Length: 347
Image (cartoon, rainbow, N blue to C red; front, top):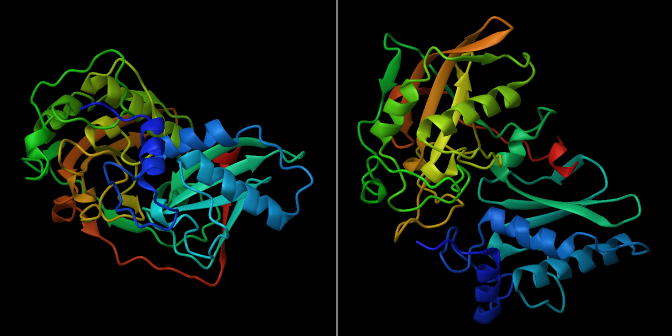
């Protein structure tokens, strides 16, 4: 399958005659712009635009007009007060000088996308970062976002445990035993039919990592720990390149989400693994993957403060996840307070 470029999506929208309010199904092969392509289009068009001297209301309108142009949409005569502002793409935009983002009285959604537009002190656009609700929740350091699911890992007797013998029936037609990747393929690429390893083969390859160790960057450095595991896993699966965009799932090319546990509590973010909702990802053949099709590799590890040692591995599909891991109570949402997010993504 030929990978579509950002320009392909922009041209398709321009030719369609759709406006920003025209509903588009998540993952639509023709008109839903995947987040990484949204990011590219917005950066190409918006970076270095000068907003100096514009009143806040005017600045907001000018930025929304620029976003329309970036994505191939016609500019409306007036912008409706919808949630999100760009309904068709499930997209909201926030123009910020600081790293402190506030989202008022709205529940974060895993399919809602947020374009975080960083501007300089002189009102010049420096950078655009597109994240979805799941990724935005990971950036919260204040504890105000309470819309997170969790599960408990009881280690059991086996060092390595394949929870799911097979992939979901919908995904099986697109997997291939022994799939290999060219040196130019990154783990962050979109998944492709025939390039997905079966879940059993993922399990067998990753089992070789048990007993491996790496330097512990510190108790407050969970992201760096996860990055090192991601790097090791990518090499183990056969990738020459390493890449990590922070998007779900971690190893996008394999529909594989990684979890590194040094405690029994598994943080799942805004999405239940067994969800039937579509993933913000490109179609595989004629099928659009759902969250329940995602493969989860959960590593348990011990640390002595100097090095992290991988001791256990569990591999499951999202569909089977809660057959093995006990789900905690439902998520909560408090819509009366702003979500204050220290977003290093804006830096």
